[in-house]
Image (tube, rainbow, N blue to C red; front, side, top):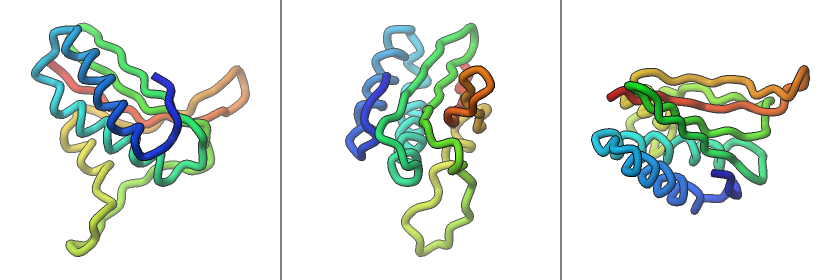
Length: 124
């Protein structure tokens, strides 16, 4: 799914991931996937300087792999340790806590670096 990097895209990404997981009979993963994809999309919208983003979802044997890709290779996400009073900054910590594995990968077009993707895996 490719969409504009705007705040309302988090809702579209949640709906996309939900529909794909329900179609693949992975009902037990829906809630964690919705939270994780919402946070990764919100990260792109808030911090990457891009016009659009792509949500990729692969349902495999025993696991689901979701990645949110953007074309800003210079701005990498990093985990923060927000204070109790801060409202934001917990998204990547939440993704790491809910998923079985997660990370950041570079996106290449041949030898040219063209972006990054933040990914997570949920196992079933």
